[in-house]
Image (cartoon, rainbow, N blue to C red):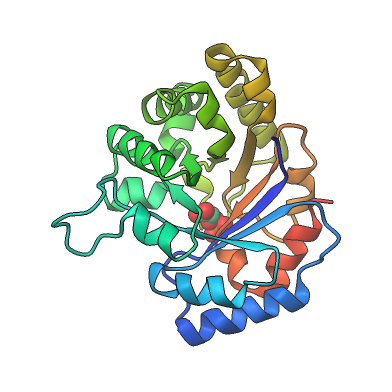
Amino acid sequence: MRNKIVAGNWKMHKTAVETKQLLNELIDKLPNDVEAQIIVAPTFVNLSLAINVLENSNIAVAAQNMHQAEAGAFTGEISASMLTNIGVQTVILGHSERRAYFHETDALLAEKVNTALKHDMNVIFCFGEELKDRQDNQHFNVVENQLRDGLFHIENNAWEKIILAYEPVWAIGTGETATPEQAQEMHEFIRETIRKHYGSDIAEDVSILYGGSVKPDNAKEIFSKPDVDGGLIGGAALKAEDFSKIVEGIR
Ligand code: PGA
């Protein structure tokens, strides 16, 4: 089912005290008459806290990553069942920072996707080209390859658990946003690529979020594009007022 979604990726920000404060501000400030699913992704150590604070709200909690194995000698890692056991049903996989700084490959991400699906989790699957790819006019190829190698092995019925997040790397944390037209052009291409592999029903049903320097003053225009179903927000998700204004933009 194609939903409008606004998700906040908090990255490595906010202590427990700050997490609680921001969540309470979000409960107060977020408009509750907007038909969009709201998700926040605090860091691992604050997920339980977030689940508790948000218990009676309609804000969902996602993890920013997880390991592909069920359990084992993987010092410092977190498994799917550790997440679902505390009530986390959604995980962000393939964020460009995971790909760039932690060397996550498409093949590894395909494994992580399988593990998440096995645990009946929702996956926010991130992908997007680097600046050089766009300059070389390779951005469509890069995106198609990332989808094919990380995701296109899944069964048709698994698509109901998938949310896509197109995040051009050159727009993440840089203040440089794709224009609404660039976002729409790529989102349309993504939907078309899914249509080719999986058919129209799945292509029409999947939510495709845009991420990369979405701010209160540009969200509305980006979200107004027909193939943009919402956003994955980094920096601007760390301030309740900004995030709320972004959510307003999805009306
Ligand atoms: P940004 O990050 O909004 O700070 O550019 C987006 C993301 O990394 O998901």
